[in-house]
Amino acid sequence: MKTFQKIAIPVSLGIIGFLIFNSCSVGIPKGATAIKNFNSEKYLGQWYEIARFDYRFEKNMDNVTANYSLNPDGTIKVQNRGYDYVKKEWKESIGEARFFNDKSEARLKVSFFKPIWAGYNVIDIDDDYQNALVVGNSTKYIWILSRNKEIPNSIRERFLAKAQKLGYNTDDLIWVKHN
Image 1: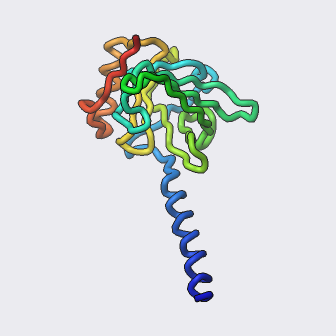
Image 2: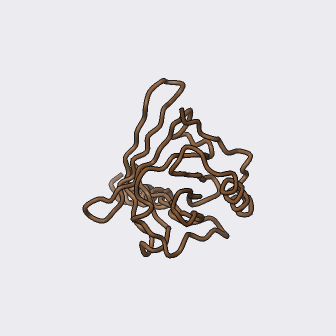
Image 3: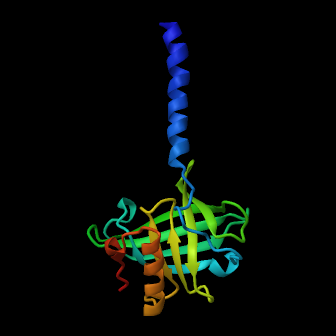
């Protein structure tokens, strides 16, 4: 029995470690490129979520905002907030973002539940940092963000065309209400 425990415990820990490691995917979808010459200071502040896919952690949410601020250690505080219109209550999640490579490249990893990290890649942004297209580590995750509650139609069409070209089914986007 002791021999079994000597083998089973390390193997079990190894499997758990492997599962945690695999859940920490911080990649970028094939064909997508994160913004280079990214100005992280201009990106800080409040963003309105304009559209997203229906994720379980944002289920039934409207009035969703993301606020990014600099932590003393140089990481970025991520504060997501939204109104659950079914439960009739506000929800908030606080996380941390770190640059994957250099802070001049808009590839980050974000965690709301350490040690699990996920990819956060800004793949399109307008010159004034007013509207952004963000994708996760696969074509399951996408967000259209804006500094305003609405985006110009030309930007909307540009972001949708780029997402479709990368294999995103934009018909599945949820357009977030802000009221």
